[in-house]
Image (cartoon, rainbow, N blue to C red):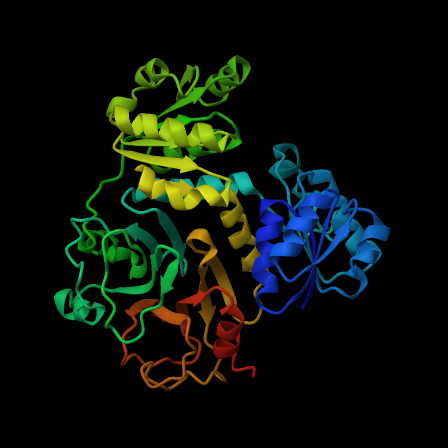
Length: 456
């Protein structure tokens, strides 16, 4: 597929690397020549320096022959105009744009986006995506990553194995006999920079592993307990940072649990006043999140969860560490720089939210073809978890998984058949139109698409 990406920032570079690794023809546009140089050096892509909404620049990038435009520059206006130019002049089939400003996202103006007006096929709102991701972690504080799949029937969960994990040094094939009634399957293990995709059941978990598993949503608490995580949902939360994400989080916390309380710390007096006016359900403390006295006033010492979601990575990390030291039971830090993500668990921060990774997942959901329904990019870009429907022409149909020719780097986690969740085992037989959840190691998603669809 020929793809043009507008913007070579964190999201643009990440999605470019991701799609180029799957043999797509990718061109990246950015007005900053240094950003273009970096992305060209790190990925097999072509770079064009210029304003991404200008028709001549889009022409140079080859948009006339492209099937997809992804506009993720720092400017909403450039992203919107680029999609308009792509539609009107180049007739690009699919157009995706990232839009941040709530002035454009107001539901009152939803008619703005359509084939007769601003022809954007899919709008990505980072703040909404990030706040939803953090809210899911609030519901399951023992996990560092949570994703609802299959219409909420299945959960993808990432957990860190600690010394108290009862299944350390146990071959994975024994888990079925240890927990015979538990509908749960481990699909990937991240150990340092290595990704282990379980296949024969001989792999064993070690302390410090980051484990991704899929389970029936009704079995979530039992599955978490199997990994030594018995944390309960917090009744109180302190949110450091009162921007769009912080306000959305406070709203979601109140919507999910009316009895739960949220306190927002915001350094800007005008913004703090705005929050107090617009969110009467939340308490507001005006001050610096790195000030221990302010954290104490906000009740950090007794809070269930501390969430640091300001626009500054360093402030988020340091305030989360300070909150942990002061007694916060669970800490979550928003970090944009992907280089910081591997440090979080070693520093003692319980979970990290990486907006570029979340935005990439949202984009991939619309990029994936065939029978792919949903996509979730896992920690540090090691791969993707796909939700997909099995085509009747797939070579998997009618075969037990242990006998199927499943390519390396792929592992199945669950099947949903007629509304029933089925844990995947070696003897599990795939049927046509099954809904499956599977993990695809980085660069293997295209093979997964082919396997599921049968289009060889």
